Amino acid sequence: MKPLQISAETAQKLSKSLNVPIEQIMHMPQHILLAKLAELQKEEKKDQ
Image (tube, rainbow, N blue to C red):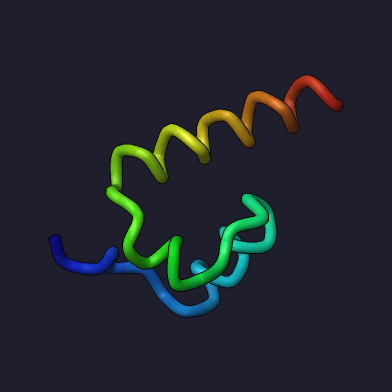
């Protein structure tokens, strides 16, 4: 599996918001990353 095609800045933001090391973000399967992002968005909408 190849690393995700995202910028370093994006990886840093994701690692900070998901509380996951950058290395783990870069090697995370894309479908899992998308699911985690969807969870984050739901939580943000709930907080507003």
